[in-house]
Amino acid sequence: MSAVLEKKSLPYLQVLDEEGNVVSAEWMPKLSDEVLRDLMRKMVFTRIWDGRAVKLTRQGRLGFYAPVAGQEASMIGSEAATQKEDFLLPSYRDVPQAVWHGWPLYQAFLYSRGHQHGGQFPQDVHVLMPQIIIGAQVVQAAGVALAFKLNKEPKVAFTYIGDGGTSQGDFYEGINFAGAYQAPAVFIVQNNQFAISVPVALQTAAETLAKKAVAAGIPGVQVDGMDVLAVYAATKQAVDRARAGGGPSLIETITFRYGPHTMSGDDPTRYRTKDLEEQWQRKDPLVRFRKFLESKNLWSEADEERVIAEANDAVKEALSQADNYPKMTVAQLIDSMFESLPADLIAQRADFAEEGK
Image (tube, rainbow, N blue to C red; front, side, top):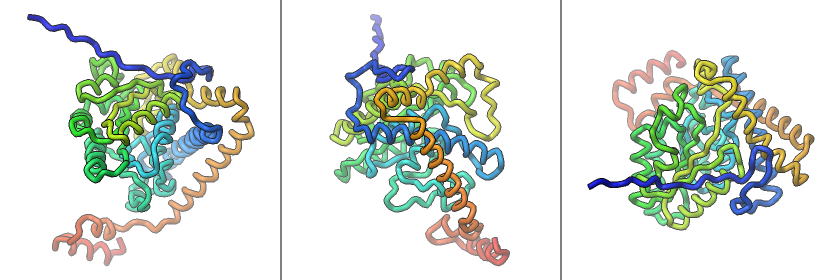
């Protein structure tokens, strides 16, 4: 006896084409003019801040940094669809979502430098530290979401992972656990085409990454990740569904990072062609959304210039705060390791404190 495996088709969601024209009025989110303008403001702000961060890293004024240019629609559109009470579990590239969810920018800079205060989130900011271990945040998101369900709290845990991260065991364990317990979680796969230098085609034989939701028994959708309205619409549907007790969802955003994987030596010209990069630049999320807003008289060159100035001022102020924040000592690091220090660390702490370290 032979069995035929059917491909379960999953929806592909797009609201705006590359020229900013509405191609799917059905999925157009009902947003006020103010919210539409705010989405654009946040994307422009993030693009400017990202460019400054790249330069600051090259100057040695920041530490670890993963560029985000090209992924603004995926990041901003999804975070904007959540509520302040919802809990964000970011990966290392998802600093913009964390900042827009409430993480002070100067602390994000301190985090990049490895300063302990960077991860001391204000009490009302529902964000965990950006996760460096690939896929660990997916398991953690499932656990946070289950806690919300057990406590009968109308909150959602949402998390991000890259296309390469979907090959990690933690990814499967996390979405399977959330699916089994119908936990209120939203898993967002940002498919930026390359896991460092490895293209998606070499990562998996799956037709799409969204189809990995099928094995976990949860809804999956593939979205044009360069279209901020499509990302917002898909995330809002998933978040509302989770909050109402409908369980988790998986969203794959098809996007592209214009820069290197991180500023730690990656050279994308060694594995990406110029033609490919130009093809994706024609899909630029800011250009597309700008055209849409301009057609509605909701955005102008003056608006853009104001946001650019705002972003430059904010980065300058945040950098000044980070520069002037007290330097971290080894003794402080030891203090934070355990509730009660063992004898050997007590001795080490005393030695470092005596040396002024």
